[in-house]
Structure formats: C-alpha cells, structure tokens
Image (cartoon, rainbow, N blue to C red; front, side):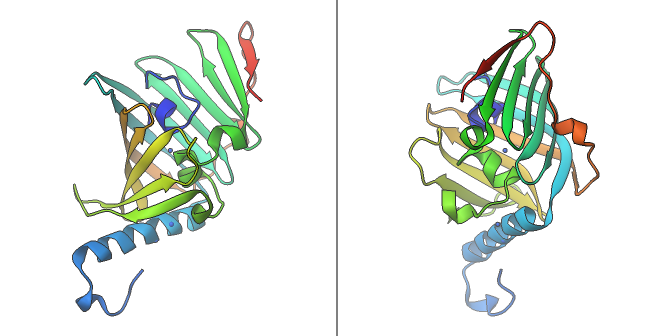
Length: 218
C-alpha cells in the first residue's frame, strides 16, 4: 500500500483460515482458498504483535511506478507503526486511539481518530482484532507465485479502495495487492516478519516534533 492507498492516511504518492477431511472430492481452488482464509483467521487470532520490513510498489493508472521501503510493527488491538525510509521519510503511528501521520518534508502532522483512519481498511485486516465479517466480504482466489490468496472486498462504499488481495505462506502474510478507488494498484512485499515479539510501548507513542504543524482531522 503506499500506505496512502492501503490506509486512507498515506501520502498519495504512494496493511482469517480449514478442511482436514474429505479433500479428495474438493476442487483445487476451493482447497487453496479455504487454506488462505484459515491462515488469515489464525493470523488475526494468534499473532498479537509483529515486526518486519516492507517494500511497496505503486502503479498508477497512467503506468507510472513508485517504490517505497521501510519498517513496520503492530500490536493488537489497533496499534501500529509504519515507517517509510526511502525514497523519503514518512511516519504513521497509531496508539489505538489516534493515528498520526508525520511528513518531515512538509513539517506537518495529521491526527485522526483511529476508527476513522482504519475503519474498513487493510489496516483493519492485518492489525485489528474485530470480526472480519463485519467489514469485509472474503472471496476465493487461486494460488499463484507459491502463495495462497484471498480477496477482501469492503462492505462500505466509502472505504477508499475496491479490494485487497492477500497472499499467505506458512501462516503469515507475504504480499498484499490493493486496487484503490482511483484505479491505482499498490503491491507490498513483507520480509523478516517476526510474530509475537516484545515491542517497546514507545514504538506506538507519538509526540509532535518541535516546529511541526498539527492538523486535526476529527
């Protein structure tokens, strides 16, 4: 996702699973989909925190491409840190109550309530703890690139994106592909993902830097 596509708070220049018997009579696609859904459900239920790195590529409808790299951390429910390192610095932090987006180049911080910023977004899928069925319709997708895929379609028309595809392997999300409401596709690859590590509370706290303007969007 630049997280701008993934989470409705990013700069536009740019985050549920079943069958153990009777498999012989099931088509391959059904098995792949059920497994991906199970992996997502298990990930949401069992992985309470995680850290890792990401590489995001955004393809605009005109064919232009942009790439971002950085690190992330999350802790359920609703706390996360998404830090873009290249090609420019950007930081998004959620303390579970509010989401702060800090753009050093603009010397500006945007504050939103977490419910408004996350809502029915990919962040809710990966970092939230509520019922996925409340906000998404989860659909079958075939295996590809060695991963098991599912598609989540938001139930609300104002989510800001059409759908998000999530590719799983070994119980963890490996890739995410999001089509936003503007026809732009964002692809994220996760790496070095560590499940349930100890994360300092300070990672999910944010203080407005001296000299930066604070814009409240509540």
